[in-house]
Amino acid sequence: MRIDVVTLFPEMFRGFLDGSLLGAAQKAGLLDIRLRNIRDFATGVHRQVDDRPYGGGPGMLLMPGPVVDCVESLLTENGSSETPDPSSSIAMLSPSGRPLTQEVVEEFAGRQRLILLCGRYEGFDQRICDTLKPDLISVGNYVLSGGEVAAMVIIDAVARLIPGVLGDSQSAVDDSFSGTERLIEGPQYTRPREYRGLRVPDVLLTGDHQRIADWRKTQAILATRRQTNTHTEK
Image: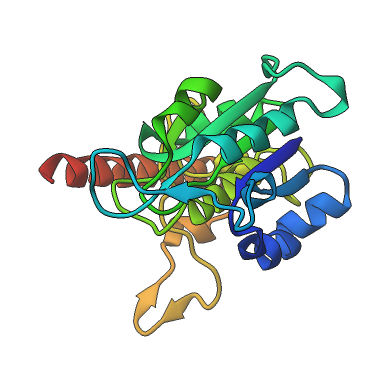
């Protein structure tokens, strides 16, 4: 799978992409992650990429020209069409987007290519959306300084679902929010059997795989209900 990140700060991704699972996945050829700097497509002496919003207001907006030119350069690589094929997705990180869920992550992981647009300042000029028609994605109801951290969240979540990235393919299947029931994983335990008076549940020591599976399923259901109730109360 190929992931292109369109950003003003590509240097933010270096350590993140080179380490751990992502670094290994790229070396193995399972992921092809490329960084594209918006400023490379700016014009003028100062290579300006932002300007004040019409009508007044605080902050600056990313100008349409550099962003659109940057994305279109990606879409037209190797003589391809400016319109992405069905196996590709353009995702713009935006607080007005649909929430990032495991279902959305699975959707992205099924694509051959994903282009992530990282905003800065007060966001994007609306004409960028009107021209590129990206999928607007929000990682939560809070404010970040830019879309780079949000893009890292998406990259990490999607990478886990690419076959071969995780050492144990069952890990992604058993993750929270995965599977048909979308349950949250319940509590897990390892050695020692007792720590500060807290003991590992006896059922996990029985060796009875069915009983253990039933216990874990029950704990997952309870954890999911607790989260649902917490969100409902808020």
